[in-house]
Image (cartoon, rainbow, N blue to C red):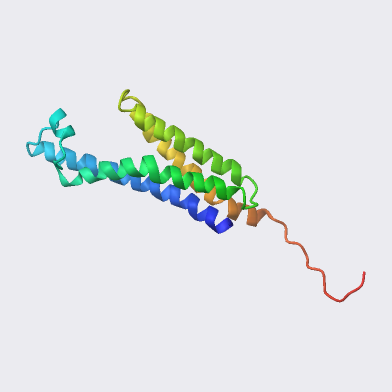
Length: 156
């Protein structure tokens, strides 16, 4: 179960990196499209047509952020109860908390654009917390004292 916990924690960190790359891909595509004469208005936003190819980055960012990462974070929290690693539940709980904050900031950012800055900062915190959670196993293994094994067949 320790390996599952570690994989899930690293997967959250990888997904945060995917999130960052997808939103920047979409933003760069949008900038290029506007520079070439594209117009971003309400009609373009509500259209079913894809105005530029990189718009898929916005879609991936939304799906990952609203569905994939929250599910992985919940699985991480569930697995943390079975790892036996000290601090694993606390670290996984922090990851879940930061995911909840991240989703909330993402949704509220559409209403209060200044929250977009906090969304980016919280993403860095989430990435760090996920890596910290993944490394719990290594820290526990390094700090565990080695027990001398009793020799078989000797009477004490």
